[in-house]
Length: 414
Image 1 (cartoon, rainbow, N blue to C red):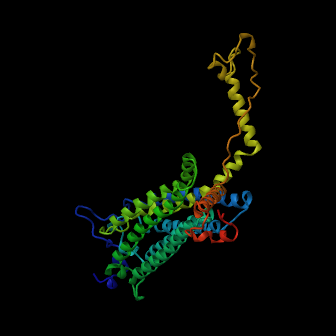
Image 2: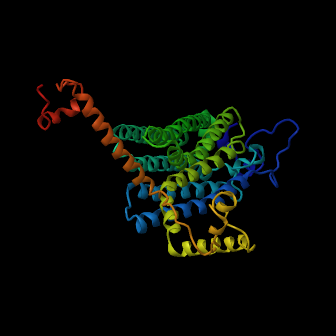
Image 3: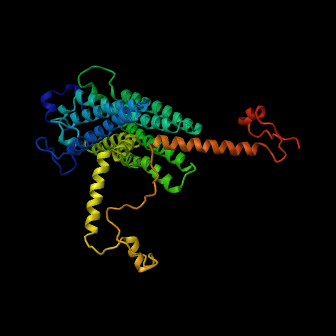
C-alpha cells in the first residue's frame, strides 16, 4: 500500500493492522489496557516522591551530609516523572497506546505519536542510567574503604552509562526517518525499522536484568564477607535485598519484551512490559533511599515524644496484666524456689522497675559498615604484620604493602 497516496479521510477508515479471522475493527469503544499504565503511575509516583523527600530531609537536617548520590536521586526522580508523563500522554484520549492495532485507524498513528514513543524510550534509558548510578554511588559512599568495592562500582558505572547511551542512539537511528515527506514516520516503521526498535528494547531489557543482579550482588557480597555475627549480616543485607522487587520486575518485563517481537500488535502487547518498567524505576529509586531513611526512623524512635507514647502504652498494658491483686511477677511464678523461706516473700510494686541490661544500638548503615571495615582493616593489617616476619624474625618479603615496616620495626638478631 502506498501510504503517500492516502487521504486523511481514507486513513480514518483503514485499521493499522488487519484483524484476526472473525474479528472486526472497533473504532468506537475498543478494549483497552490503558488503565494498567495509569494505575502504576498514579500509585507509585507519589510514594516514590515521599521516599525521596524523606531521604533529602534525613541527609539535610539529621545527618547533615548531602552527597552526589542524593543529587543523582533527585535527577532520577525528574526523569522517572518525565517518563511516566510521556507514557500517560500516549494512553490519553485518542492516542493508540494500549489498544489493539486493528482497533486504531491509520490517522491516529501520526508523527506526534512516533515522536512520543521515541522520546519515552530515550527518557527511560536516561532514567535507568541515573537510578542505577544513584545506587552505585551510594555503595561507593558506604564501602569507600574497600578497594575491591571501588573497582566493582566504577566498572558498573562506566558500563551502564556507555551501554544505555548507545542503546538510546540506536533507537534514534531506528526510528527517525531520513526524509521529511508526508507520513515519513509511518513509512519508516513499515520498512522494517519497527522490528529493529523492538529488538533494541529487548536487548536493553536483558542487559538491564544482568546489571540489576550485579548491583544487588555488590553490597550483599561485601557485607557477607565482613567479620560480623550471621544475624547482623542478614540484617544489613535485608536493607539492600529490597531491590529484589526491582529485579523481579526487570526479569518479567524482559520476558514480555521478547514476546512482543514476533507479534504485530505492537500497541497492545507492550503495555504490561511498560507498566513493569515504571514499577522497576520507582521501586529501584525507593530502594536507594532505604539505607538513608533508616536513620530517619531511628531518630524518631529516639525522640522524647515517641518514648512517652510508648511508655504510656506499656504502662496501660502492664496495668491490665496486674488487675489481679495476688498475682506475682512472672519471674516468681515460674520459679517456686525463688524465695528461700516463706517469710522472705515481699509484695513487689508494679511501679518498681527491675534493672535493665543496656541493649546494643544500631547506628546508621553507612557508619556501621565503615566501622566494621576499619575494624577488619586493623585486624587484617595486624595479621599480615605477624605473617610477614617468620619465626626467626627475618623479613620474608611476601607482602610489598609492608615494606614501610622495615624502617620502623627492627627484627631480633638472636
